[in-house]
Amino acid sequence: MSKRCLFIYDQHGWAWDFMTRGIIKNLPDSWTGEKFPIGDIRFLIHNIHYKEWWNSHDAIWFWNPNLLFHLLKSDERKANPYSDIPPYPAFLDTNKIEFVRENNITVGHYGSSNTEGRILWSTQVGVRHNAFICQKYYDLAMKVAPQFKDRYNIVHPAVDTEIFYPNPKPHTGFIVGWAGHANWEYKRTYLLDQIKFPIKMQADWGEKYFIRDRPFEYMADFYNACDAYISVSKQEAIPQPILEASACGLPVLSTDVGGISDFLDKEFLCPPYPENEVVKFMNEKLAEWEKNPELRREIGLRNLKKVMDDWNWKNRTKQIIKEVCEK
Image (cartoon, rainbow, N blue to C red; front, side, top):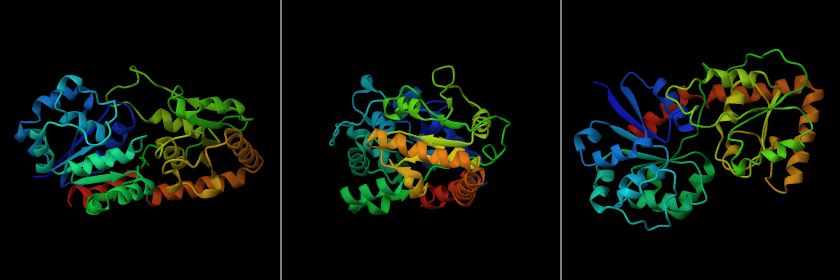
C-alpha cells in the first residue's frame, strides 16, 4: 500500500494549488497525494480530534503557517486563514498541540512582514519540518531559532516543464510580459507605465478564476507571446511567473527581493529602491535586449537550463519525498 500525503492550501486556482498539483503529478508509486483547500477550514477544525482521519496520512503539508495556526486556535469563531499570526507567543488550544506533535507535519515559509514570528511559532509548537522557499528565510531561521536546525529544509518552488516550455507565438515588435495580481500594492504596477516598451499583462484575479483544476496552458501561451519578462515588486518570495517565463525560454529582469537571487543571476537584478533607478535599470536592459535578439535568446536558454536541471517539479518532488516526507 502506498503512503499518503495531504496538502492543505488556500484556494483553488492559485499559487499553492498549482504547486500542490505539480508535486502530486510527480509523486513516486510509493506515495499518493490528496489536496484540501483551507477555504473549508471549519471542516478541518471540527475534525482535528478525529485522529483516524489525520493519522491516515503519512505526511501533512501546510503551505503557510497561518493555515495551521488558525486550525489550532482556541477561538474557532475567529478562524480566518488569511489573517496573520499574531506576535509570538500566540494563545492556542493546548489540547490541539498534541495533534501537531503526533503527526508528520510540514509548514512552508514563503515570506511576510512577520516571517520571524512565524518561524518562532511553528518551531515552538513542535512542527516537525519547516520548508523555506529560499536561502534568505532559511538563514533567518538559523539566526532566530538555531536549536531547531534539524527541522529546516530549503524547498524552492518549481515549474511543470510538460506545460511550460519554449513554443514561440508569432507577434510583431518587442513585447515585455508581466503577470500577477495588478491591484496588490507591493507589485507596483504603476511603474510599468514608465517602461518604454509595450507591456503585455496577464492579471486574471477573482472568484471566477479560482476554480478546481484551473488550467495552466493559457499562461504558457502568454509567455510564449513575449520576448522578455519583468518583475518590479518591492516585496516577493520567488514568484511563479519568473520560473514559468524562464521555462518558456525568456530572459527575465527583476528587483532583488525575497529569494529571487536564488534563481536569477545578479546582473539581471536591481535593488527595489529608489523606484526611478528600478525603471532606469529595466529600460536600459530591455533596450539592449531589443537590439540583440541573439543575446536575449542566449540568456533565455540559460534560464531554461536552470529549470530543466533543477527547478522543475520532477526534481523538486524527489527532494520533498526524500528530505521531508520520509525523514
